[in-house]
Image 1: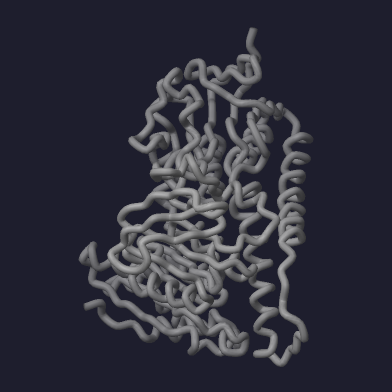
Image 2: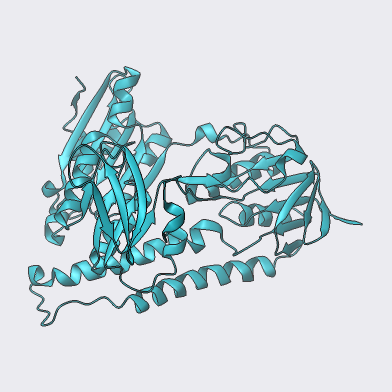
Length: 459
């Protein structure tokens, strides 16, 4: 005996619930399946909780700098990690409970709280019950990758998910991975009061970024007392009393790092291994991501993949846009596509990095005739007033069309200001539109016209 729906949505990350609501509003019956917490990575172990922790870390840092602003704090600043965690948990709970209330009260949506597994291209079994639908949408996300380090089975370690349960201050946090997750946790725990060492296999941090961005981030972290080891070629771990010893081979420096706690931040893997996708005939790529076309359809008619599990984006905003693309195609006869999307993301260290479009290195490799402009944040009046002058702004423009190709804003407000350039890119407007705009003073955004006035040919 089976139950039939118009659509089945597997997973409740940023794409699934919104798509389910759109389908239900269009009069379709929808089964929504979630095996753990509603909200997926973002709500439970990703964006929302980590940015709450970043906010607490920023408050601690600002309090320690009080004397710079004429604010006298007569005793050393102390961070209560139990209260930090409680604040984070409360924010997560509000978001999760709001989502549960919304979905639970929606007409034509039926929730199933268990693991789903395909039995055919049109059927899914959950909690012993067989559900059938002509359309199935997979939104199952990713999880932290655990590298095959020799000795890892003999020591305790954390991933980003496990760090959500930490309510104490690690004496010395050793982080394997010098990209977004590793750097955010590294800076926040240094500001909480831990000693922090970041170990990265590449020759620089956040290797996907331009070299000047990587160098500036290294300088920012170093100024806060974070030790960074780069170019690590071999790794192994072993217990050292109650501590963890990480053996290194990086050509220079000490051959090991001994810390009280170990965090692995080396990437993500899709949650596709236990879905029974082979029974539905759904194709995966070599890394286990579900293959999709430009409108997020899999190779099997009637099955779509949205969010991180399709390998076409690794962010909350790209997952949400996936739902918009699918809904537009199915419900509005609007042929939106993934390829319409411009790359945009942020790194939430302090100061943050806002990134859109191509890097300067990518433009050079493409052989494009282009212009580049760069200005230090110390030239921004608002940054000077706030005492936050670290970083710089950089933009790359196509010489002929004058269209913006990409930008990096590493500095106070960079994650917000970068949208000025992103919106101009979506509009297809020449950079001169923003260059001639009159921005409010004093703001960070007011330097963008000046930045665009400093363009020079890329050599």
